[in-house]
Image (cartoon, rainbow over all chains, first blue to last red; front, side, top):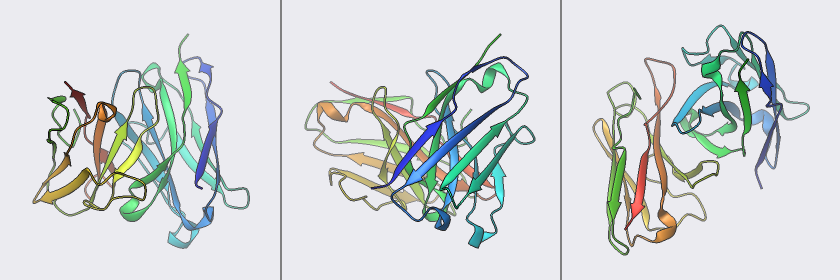
Length: 120
Length: 110
């Protein structure tokens, strides 16, 4: 059974940094791209970015709203994906979901999410 | 404003059929497959339809997906109260180099 467990969500002040982790199990982690999706309170889903598998170059893509501030990385030996968030803004307040990217980079599995609140 | 356009809400009576539309462009739906997700209140989204019209294991065959040109549709037949949820479409966008979502459609079963 595929499981994705996020951690690291917290209350943080604007301008600060936070790192989220996603521990995966139930599949060969290194074979898949992993992505992050967020959902602001009462709003829709927003794709944050992805990291491809090493076999596909391990490259990353980001939404325009986070490019240059957020960075996704992975540790295949531990089956963990990370989302490093820098220069956080109040509009980054959201539930952050770790997801597995399947066919055509589209999401096929979701974690339960971890809440990030950016407020002074 | 979402790249993919969905109606904010739809409603229909139990046992009836409802369709949710998702309109995009040649850089996303027109050239790539579409996934649909169901998000029950207070829960994480769940994959409902993948690769435009394929059903994941365990998903009821009351759900179906289709695509024509730059628009996709999700159909739900035999509506049940437990189908009340938010539904999202998604596709890869070749121009933006990322996944784009619809704004979501809230389904109410009357």
